[in-house]
Structure formats: structure tokens, C-alpha cells
Length: 476
Length: 92
Picture 1 (cartoon, one colour):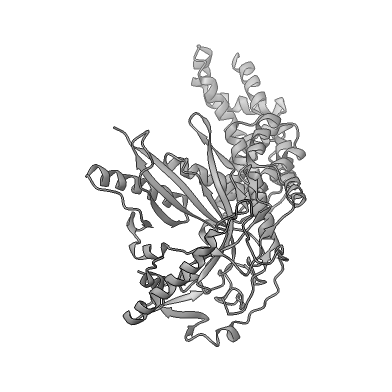
Picture 2 (cartoon, rainbow over the protein chains, first blue to last red):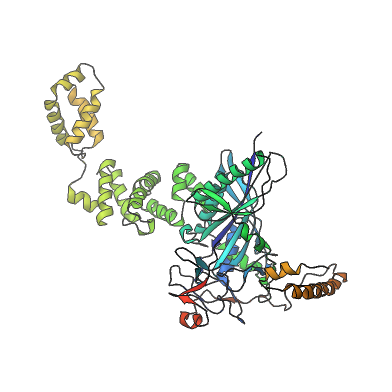
């Protein structure tokens, strides 16, 4: 009998604000340790938190984008536990009444889209950073991250495989970047995931779950979930019982281990945060945020398919980020004749070269207008697509325009039949056997002649004219 | 109402002697019993009080107002090194 896997995810996503959730300290990444702290985020006695307005707006925007209900009154609570990177001894979070409830994220699946429910999004503050490596009897603490605002996005247990979990995370990751509510840089810990995993026989009630903590790479999350599913099935099939516990993925050993020692700390004793009155937002504020919502990735993808006739694949690639999408739209505006050619050249040629150069589209040395200039020269047969790739290489190097490079290197396509006839005659003279063969009925030799002529012209002969003239002259 | 005073002490990181636990346990249970009388009040149709002050939360602008005061702020820390707080090892 088969097993069914049940997965729910909790994502901690850093809200990209200039300042922390409850104080005026900078959130800039990579600063010298403990240089971005103050009495509030250090938990000094007598300090009072004041919530950052942008953290509120961005949480609401995220809620609206997933079709959730925005609670016009929400509250903050204290989550109590002891750890040296949590100076106050509690984390300010939203427990009883979060700012966002409900909503959903649709993921691509084998049979069309699958809807994954979102339970809630609540605001909370991050803890500091503990360092243990290379230290004997001590740990080191950097509190620059203490108090940085987070959204915790909690899903329903709607996913049935590690692949669905990854698909959900990728959609969510793309969404928060599109909305510009989070940098979501996983290497910087701005988008971290806990996974609740259980297995059951289909139709039975939910099995006991374990929680995989604090993973920040799509690859590790998939490995950790797959490992945990296998582990649980083995435990049950061997007659054992899954123990509810937190587990930590070890990406070096490719296995998870129990965090038993932390179990007792799970009694968080939530209670209302007395330092913060309820958070009230007006329906007008919510409506204004909704009015400013950008086009979402799914809408953009569908529009690229219908308006520009792009393949689902190209539409997906070019709607991955807002920057990519707006760059593509600038390119089409500058080369409106052929949106598909724009998509091909951007997705296949430009992005490939940028990736090799380790650059993002925002700092592409070739602008959208400049690439359009190159596409214009393909469209009017000044150069072939093959030569255009070399020209693009040169444009990436020097930043010069396509026209300047074509002119300087003498790359103009030769369409003049007189010049092409001369080359064809040379090729025929050098290959008398093939000429005889062709005339004797070996039509396939046409490809050989086209290749030779193109080679002799260093790729500059217009292939259409070459074909036409070859047929004529080979008749004899 | 009985209370596991040793568990509460452990969660609060307070070390109790057996004598203290024996004394404090009944005291805390007594306090909880006293609070229990509140549950006798009929609160049907009364909204829960989130906060004693009926004020909405003021919000802070997203503007950096704090400068680096590390030296001053770390002056009260028992031990620091290269700008980091030094604490007893915490990893398991």
C-alpha cells in the first residue's frame, strides 16, 4: 500500500525596510558587528518599541497579492524563550490576531494549477546571529539583525510532495520580489523555510509531524523533505512511531538530526505585548495599497503569451523578475515589428551572455534600445542571425552600437548577386567532382555548396540569395 | 489549581531550592485560584480587551535615526571581542 506525504511550510521572509521593526536602526546587510544596534533592539530596560510603517504596508500588500483577508485590527504578542541572540528574552510577534489571514498561492502542476492555501501572514522581529565555528567554550553574538522585520508566511498542509513544496516556495519567492516587499536573498537568510512533514495512508487522518528547521536553499529543502519522508516511512514500517520533534538538516552529511534538547523550550508562553497597543489600519489605507499593486507574475506571463505570442517557456523566463519584464517591454517598444524575435534574442542570447559575465539585467552593458538596433539589422537583412551573434559579443565587450560594429568590421551581408556569383564560380571551380555529382542527380550536394559559399564569404553572403543563385548556376 | 513550579522556574531560568519550590508552589497556585474568580463573570457579548489603553498604535517612519554607538552600548557587557558579544557556548 502506498504512502501519502503531507507538507506544510512556514517561510520567514525579511521585509525590506531601511530601518528595523521597532527602532530607528539601519537594516543594511554586511555592516561591522553590533554597529547597527540601540537600546531598543538590545532589550535594555525601559525602552519602548514603535512599529515601522513600511513593514505594515508591505505585509498588507503581500496579503492582498495572495487574495487574503486584511485584519484592520491586529495585535502583537510576546513569544518567550531564552537564547543569547534574543536580548529581550522574548520575540515580539503576532500570535492571536495576525495582520493577514487566508489567501492562496497557485503552483504549476501536471494537471494544471494547484491551489495551496495560506493560513496567515504575521509580522515579527528577527533575532541576532550566533557564531560558534572555531570557538572552544564560547559563542559570539552579533545583534545587527536583532529587530529586523520579518513576515512569517504559514501555509496549509496542502502539499503532497517535495516537488510541490519547492514549487510553492519558488512562486512565493518570485512574488515577494515582484512586490518589492523583500530582497528574499536566500544566501543572506532573507528567505528561510521550516517544513512540517508527515506521512499517512491515503484517506487516514494526519500522521505525527516533524519540523525541519531553518533551511535556506531550494536544493537542501528538497533533499531534507525527501530524506524525512523516507525516514518516517521506515520508522512506521518497522513497527515504530514517529516522534513529534524539530530536526535540523545537515547538508554536509545529507541527513537530518533531532534537536531534542530544544524541545522543552517549546513552551513559548505567548501573552499580549503590553508595550504595543493594537495595530489599526483603515480600509482606505488598504484600498490605497491595493491601487498601487504592480502587475503580478502570473498576470504578466499570461499577457506576454497573448499580447506578444510568446511560448509559455519564454513568457515564464521573461516574467521572472520585474526588471526582466520591464527590460523586455522596452525592447519590444524599440523593435515592435517582432516581439518573438525580441524574446528569442533576450532569453537565449543576451541572458546567456549576462549569466556568463555574472551580471544581472539591470547592469547589462547592452541596453534594450541597443539590442533593438541589432535586431533591426537582422530584420532588414544587413546581417545574418549568425553574424549578429558575433556582433552581440562585441557589443557586450565594448558597449558600442550594432551599426558601429558592423561598419567597423565590414560585416554587412552581401546580397549583391554579382559578388555572390563570383564566389559561387570559385567554389564550383574548386570542386568539379561535386558539380558533376549534383548535375548527375545528387540533390543533397546543395547543402555542401551552400556551406562552401557561406564559408568563402566569411558568413556574410545572404543565404537566400546564395540558394537562389546556386540553383541557377549549378544547372550549367 | 495546581502548578508545576519547577517547570515554570526552568522556563524562566530561575534556580529554586527544594524549600523554595515547596513554599512558592502553593503561593502561585493560590494566585491562580484568585484569578480564576474572574471566569465567573458573565462576558457574553463583551469584546476582549487587547490593551488597557484604547489607543491605536503610533507608527515610526522608515528613516534611520540611530548612529553607531557600539562602544558605549557594549561598555556594560561582561565580555566582548572584536565588537562581538562573548557568551558561554550555546550550540548543542
